[in-house]
Image 1 (cartoon, rainbow over the protein chains, first blue to last red):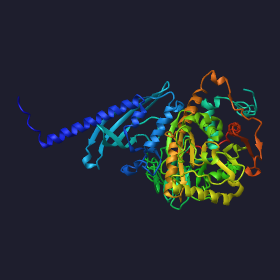
Image 2: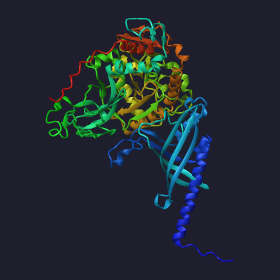
Image 3: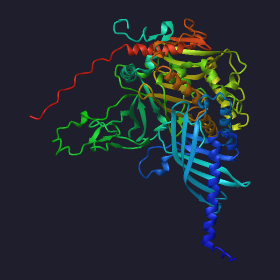
Image 4: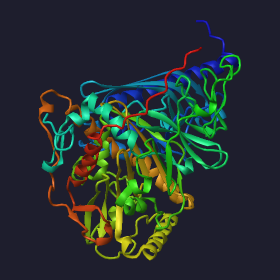
Length: 185
Length: 455
């Protein structure tokens, strides 16, 4: 039996990065599965108790004024700007069975791509995970929406996986083309 | 259709005397085209709030019916509402949602307008136009503008009465909306941003719902089963804590003939402040003080506790969350809603946070309450499209003949009718006004001057 040589530092770092990316990717696959199979209470379990869940408005601004492209968290109007308690209320509302905007329920397909993961060493102990999302929603007979944008997460190690400490959802629409935002991103 | 001297609407498609309205008014393309000309082009329409454009040069885009407008404050401090449309080829001259600009240059051929709407520069004025273009005749098209306590309305029609007369006896109720929680007329500050989204229904479904439809409360059963109110108790209204266990009249108020509406509660006695935000001392203190000041300032009239209503035709105001939703028509089958929210400018930061947090979870497409409203409007609209369905009028007869004038308090207004709890009097008043405008053909436009050909 030949012994494999110990990986050099650069290879070690690459492998660590690949492993972390793989873990995060599996976490997101599981999260999408929970949302798409409407296990919303289980999905809430992936969120840290102090989670920040934010989806800003996107403004039309002059080229270069990218600072001002989105409404500000904690200050302006936003599509979402809330924490776990508020998200729990949304789930409870759906579970009443008389939340008519989700009754009958949406069929959703959450997809993500372009995943980039930065380990926690640079980020106050939080892993930074950036991705693109594409969420397809179809409801009743022909209601159809496509939500596309960027998702910037901060993840915290918890148990044998992660919990979402903060999620910024940049939906690439100015006038929202869907009649509501009853689904989670 | 019977010949009624050209009248097609009042008594026909809109038969409020019998409480019946044809579904056609929601879905017909011909009706829609008439209402753009006969309702929207004649009415005062809400375009924005002054706090969105505090500094000279500030602008924010608005909409009037289908068309984009610019609401700006020129460098001299004066408000303007311009059609966002170049006089040369009609390209939009401003395509940023908000900002500060001394000039509006058209991207197409480079005509440039000032912040006062004047055409200040035209490329090739000499070599192309041979200095024969009278720039003074080709400024931006400007609407009449009225700022009512900072809420800016605009109107295209010079024949429409000025805004205060247009408001008529809604004034008491709209003033109540414009007043700060302490009953004074101070400054409101709009939060940054405008919620803008599309709904698959005719604009009138939203306008009439907000006009006063306490009957639809059952559709909000799901939000009332969870905690939305910042008071931290189940339900969607902060004021539930105030109104519970008190003697009051729950009222629908309609103003004739203007077609404006209000809804709210009139307490039978003066009432003490009801602790609402027990876990937020600063917020609790603020509203407690405001309550005392409002009662001192308004006396008996402080017993009115407004919930909201619709200023004819298409802006609905909501007290408490201090929001204005404007229902912009996008064809008969679609509506683009724009919502702004405001807070008292000088309120403590904690109060503003509570209000901001509350409103974006209450109204708008992510709002726990408005989501269910839109579901109803969308499918009611679909239900007005069918060939067979359209043969059957909708029922608007609730409470017909039971409207009361000068009741329950004479000071509630002049040409004002009130009904208690649930009634469709407000919808009837809204559609009566709509029908009267629709039956009035547009005045003839002055003939355009003939094109002068080169000699």
